[in-house]
Image 1 (cartoon, helix red, strand yellow):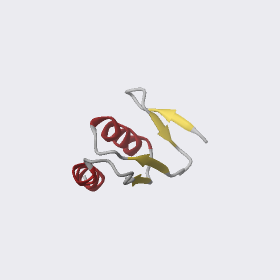
Image 2 (tube, helix red, strand yellow):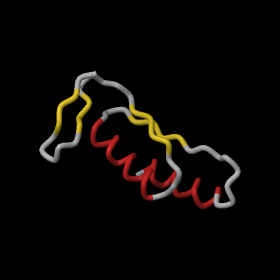
Image 3 (cartoon, rainbow, N blue to C red):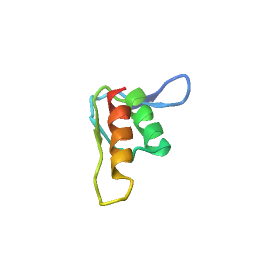
Image 4 (cartoon, rainbow, N blue to C red):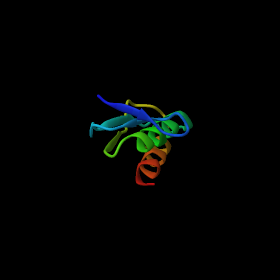
Amino acid sequence: MTRDTDANGVAQNTDGAKAFVLLSGGIDSAVCLQRALEAHDDVEALHVNYGQQTEDIERSNSERQADD
């Protein structure tokens, strides 16, 4: 994989590799998604229902983050 960095030091994908981001719906995964979008042309987001009590909220947040 070939990588360059932008003016902010963020690694930039230069070989067309797809990025996958696991979204929980929280701030940490939202930041990871943003970083992936800055570095890659092709980004896929994945949210997993593992039975948590807050699933409805987390899924809703993940969908909004992925749509933005």
